[in-house]
Image 1 (cartoon, rainbow, N blue to C red):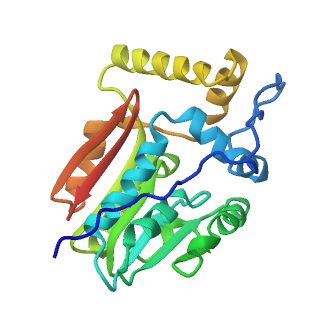
Image 2 (cartoon, one colour; image 1 turned 90 degrees about the horizontal axis):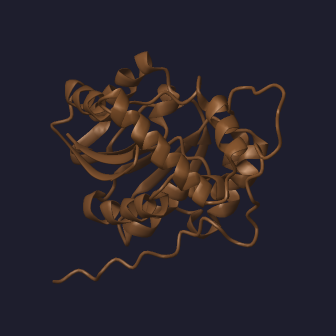
Length: 256
């Protein structure tokens, strides 16, 4: 029997209730580290759409990959779920499969918004306040780390990825999206310049770009694509495919 095509429902990142990101619009005499607090949660859909090129395409692809790889009677994990865009994409891609979606974040402000934004899929998504490093991955067929790993200390990343590899069922996949560092300093500078030009085209001022970059400097720690690929293979994944790249933003599919 031919399966029906997946119809991806609108995963709106900008609706009438979302606010415009103006966090770094005014000069700040003291810039603290970037945190996912209530002020960020209130503007996150606008912030992510205007800061990460291709974000909507990645979210839509998560729905498609869920349709292809989610296995009945397994768990799906959204680790670092923020406002639940990936979790809702998984719910939209599941069809009639009986799966439990577990969405985890360590910010209560983000989870409060995520719960409110996910009422349509409330019976499928289970939001939880927790540290993703402490989560026990069990009976999983799909795990998503959508721009999350980059916020963990580099020395702690392999342990988490190893737990994910061990918790995935045969045929299971990890979707890993990251901001990366280019292989050479020259290429890295070119990608950074293109990304900043993209942000300016989305309405951010030079001041906003500069202040946010400073706030993220000690928090978001990018690595080379080759480093990610080798680490994934070292912890037990058999193949890694980079399916998306725009400037210094990538998304990979790793299989056990």
